[in-house]
Length: 169
Image (cartoon, rainbow, N blue to C red; front, side, top):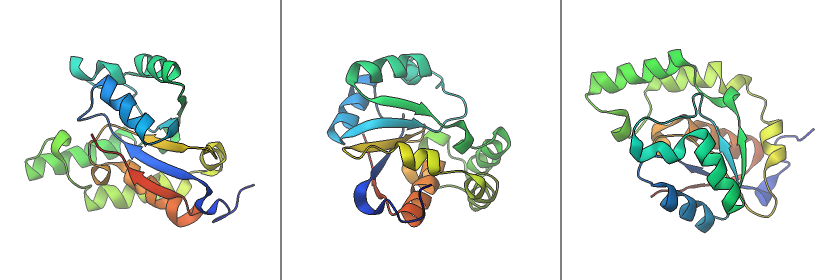
């Protein structure tokens, strides 16, 4: 079993979202970032709207396979519907759309940490990290700090010493 800090700087993890990319630019950004494994941490693996149809699970997995990038889905790291609704309510209170969110609500962060992050088994995730490239935590939001992937990334850094890079369009 992998212990805390065992991986040191042997592993690199990036984060990446859907918004701001098209299918081609997304794959190009992954290649440029040395990504060998995409870790999908969405609960629902679809995105509304024709401009983001490329990010729906089946299409995305097919494109990744053609690009030589492995794919894993980790639904246990996804926020529950209730947690997402909590964040949406805060977005509405602030008058911002989720595509333009810049940070997570404090209550969302507190509850996601207690209900998901603190209970998560990271051994399967850390064990799957490629030694010769980068794994990318994948969700929807453009800015990592506006998404639960930033919380996961921070936990991986704190507990396993991985190096984090946030890939942007």
